[in-house]
Image (cartoon, rainbow, N blue to C red; front, side):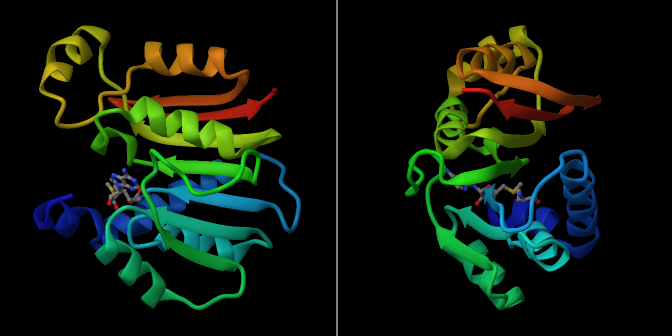
Length: 188
Ligand SMILES: C[S@@+](CC[C@H](N)C(=O)[O-])C[C@H]1O[C@@H](n2cnc3c(N)ncnc32)[C@H](O)[C@@H]1O
C-alpha cells in the first residue's frame, strides 16, 4: 500500500470500525479456547491484538509490509499474539495449522488474490472456519479491469467457485454495497 492509503487505513477511527466488525464476525462461530487464529494481511495488527486480548485464542497476524508489522509488534506484547512478515501468496505454515483463518480488506490489494484464498484454505484445518471480508466487483468489471493487473478484483462468482472447489460450506454471508462478509466451514 502507498503511504497515502496507509494514512486512511491505519487511522484509529477506521481501525476501531474494522476491529468491531471482526469481533462481530468471530462471534458468529462457536470456537474453543486455545484455537489458533490467523489474520492474513493484518495491517497494524489492531484486530489481531483485540482478538488475542478478548479471547483465549492463539493469534497470529501476517503482513507483507515491514512497516505494518513493526507497528503491529509495537502495539502489544501478549503471549498469545504473534506477528510475522509474510507474503499471503506463500504462507510459511503447514497444512491445516489453523482453526480459524481470517482476512479483512487485504485480497483486493493482490492481483492474484485467488492464490491467497488457496493458501488460506490450505493452512486451515478441516472443520475450521474461514472468515473473509473484502470488496466484490461485478463480473463484467472484473474482466475489464483485471487486464491492468494492478490490484485484485474478487467477485462473488469467483469466490463461490473457489469455495465449492475447496469443499467450503458457507455459514454466513452479508453484503454491504460492494463489500462482502463470508464465513465458510472447511468440510474437507
Ligand atoms: C487495507 S489493509 C487491511 C488491514 C487490516 N486487515 C484491516 O482490515 O484494516 C491491507 C493490508 O494487506 C497487506 N497486504 C497486501 N498485500 C499482501 C500480501 N501479498 N501478503 C500479505 N499482506 C499483504 C497490506 O500491507 C496491508 O497492510
